[in-house]
Amino acid sequence: SDATNSAVGDDASAFARLRRSRFLESIPFWGPPAILVFFFVYGAIAWNFVISLTGWEGLGSPDYSSLSTEMYARLLSDPSFAAAFRNTLVLLVAFTVLSLILGLLVAILVDQKIRIENTFRTIYLLPMSLSFVVTAIFWSWMYNPSNGLINEALRGVGLDALTQAWLADPQFKLAAIIFALMWQFSGYCMVVYLAGLRAIPESQYEAARIDGASTVKLYWRVIIPQLRASTMSAAVVLVVFALKAFDFLFVLFGVNPGQSADILSVMMYRVAFDRIQWAYGSAVAMVLFAMTLGVIGPYLYVQYRRGEL
Image (tube, rainbow, N blue to C red; front, side, top):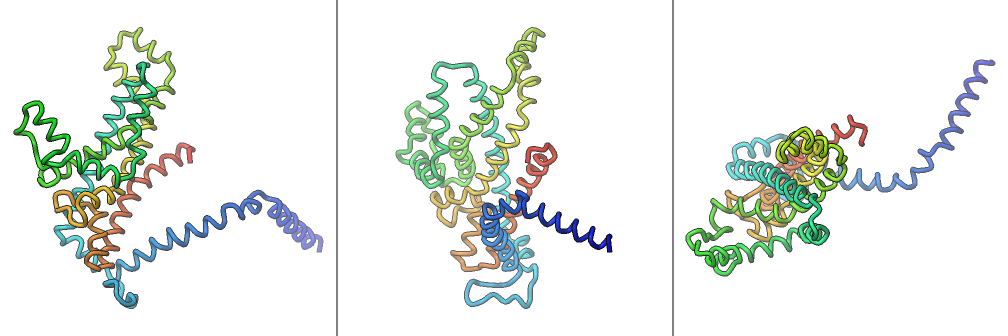
């Protein structure tokens, strides 16, 4: 009897502590958003995966009685998917690496306490505030083969032989896209790296110079290794924006950019909404989602291990 009364008393006190806990008090604030995210984001992803296992063409109701991986097998034998997957990887790697390098070099320059630092930093970061649609229209003017600024500048310095139809030639399409996206997002890398540079104590610069380190060795061996966290965070953001470059390509080329510039997000839209093959488009979307997880997952894991998440 005493043991039973003790257990009941412990349960009552535990329930009382739970009622007074901050967890229950906070549920009205995070509960509704969590339910909405779970339903409209994760629920939609799960439903999209199920659709990719059907043969739904978008008309009528999908048949869930016979699920298969036929659409994924079809992807592996589709040359359009192979080209889009390859272009997406090239875009991710080239755009991310080149933007990081350019942003780091500009950040090092700005860190030298130049007079117009604030003005330059604002102007250089300004393109990131533009949408992909505005950027695409701007660069379509820049790349215009007849009166675009790039070809006009080449003609102005006597390099007429280098003028190109930048967005029509398969050799230059993807490179032109990468260059335009670098223009838009290298300013973000500059700001991230500049914050990292300003966080490094001045004593480390002075100690390296006293030891006789040249400027190149100072940055290569002392400063840049301490910017790993900045590099990782900036790289993740760049990769996410590269995967979301659908708007940019759609404005420039529509649904058919050609195999030399096609990427997975454009292919997904084309097969799902232009060709009305929803199951096949869902399979492409799941591959794109897996690529995103492949980038975000390791980053979140590293942040968790460091106690920063």
